[in-house]
Image (cartoon, rainbow, N blue to C red; front, side, top):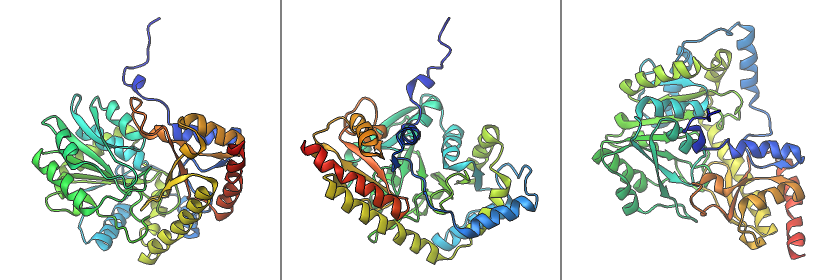
Length: 391
């Protein structure tokens, strides 16, 4: 019998991040792998969801999102960035940022074209580009500040370059791209007539004065930027799967067609509920960053006390930690040791790199979007590392 698996599917694996959640459950380990909170969502949103269900918002919504939600998204963008998006022609509500990214790529990328991806990268990007039949080209972000070589990026752009994917604030590194970096990327996009596809899901989670700058606010970039976003991280509802994509009217029309045939639409009652989230006052977002910064600082201190060398993130809610102080140069071996023997699950760093490089083999990623009790319990378990390694 012939192999019925497609060539595309053979080029990537299942999600290692989500696999580590299954491994954590198997060994009853504290899950600091997958980026979901273990604390309740805001009470206002839970109440709004219940009201929406009982008000019978339970049938198909408009494929590209309810008018109320698209209006609310446009109003929030106007308030936060003083930029106008037409909710009728420029906003598409989808099933999480995950679907938003693949819909955007399928709507704009042709087989054989090239898409530039910064490495380390969130694992979906490479797979998404492969699913489009396109060719990923990788540009390294260099630890510890995760900057990139401007000359190397310029050399990566060719007449085949269709798009570049930028994730800021970044998963897994926590890097927040600086204005000069974004302006350089924007200049290349204009010069080579390429798209910028931005993942901005952590836009409101930044620290130490770092500021998120949307690519689409830069000169001449509004028409060539596709911004992918979601309510998952900002409002602690990762299971609701409500994402949204903003783009020019022409590109939005293409994204809506792809989205329609991928998923038809996002959950109707949750779309109704999320309208309330976009009405939260600016203080909510300041408190969100303070909330996570306190957890970041606590976990970095605990990790360094246990013997890790950490890279302090400027945004998002992950910490990249160097495992070489423990004598390991195999991140997967160390990850399973940590899960089985110490009782803390993390993500191996190589997950965020191509299989052809070893750059991630001495790192693991910790997630700190957890209750303090959870982080304190993890810190207690991690403290055992010193004694175990000394033996």
